[in-house]
Length: 152
Length: 189
Image (cartoon, rainbow over all chains, first blue to last red; front, side, top):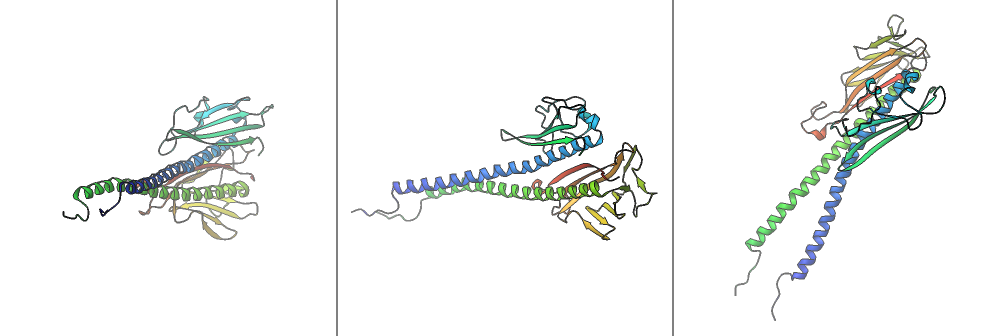
């Protein structure tokens, strides 16, 4: 009878399959968590930009209510691109479109929608602020909603 | 027939080749994860400290401040933003506020730290820890009319202190900087 040394082909195939399955699983977990961390990092920044924007809108409201209600309308309201926070954005209501020009690196865009609630004079404005960015092909966004009133 | 033990040269070459392909990709992923972890850790600390400073300053000024002064102790002579159309930005990076109980408090930036001093407790508290550096601090006030309260504007940049002791580093994942700005309208004026 011949003495067999080493492994048979079947044994080697089984080992290799098990090992490769394990490696593929480990790698996919690692790359997934890496991708997730990148998303989390951008989420921290995006929520900061959203709060910063809302804080600025609130300051605009504090400064002059009569002027502030002129920026919105009733119904579906008006949307402004507020990538930069200065008064010149109020001249024309416009969406940011594909201008992701906020942050370092410039991957975010920030828009605000102002809806005046019915009433004369207007006493409440619904504010929806959205920070949007594109993460490896998919679009992510952080919306913040609040209602500003003439008397706080 | 001669019995062979061990591996042949070809087998060794194949094994080494496979190992050389696999190990670098594993290291790339591991280092990527470590880099991201550092960045997220620093960013979240900076965010927490920045939010803390902003919330504290806003709440204090909004609910406690009555008059605004550019020097301490506050007197009539060093009051700012008392009349309409008055705009003031502090060159000394500080403002002093009186409160309804006739005590006063001061928000002051000096050498990377925002400090809050209260005349009631006669002690100074740093609002950011030594892990973070505050830069480009600006504080000022403006008043549009005598009938509405003055507005205090605050802006600053906060970053994580790197091994160089500053905001910058040779490695991009070690830096984390966030800009904050707000305007606060006084309720008691």
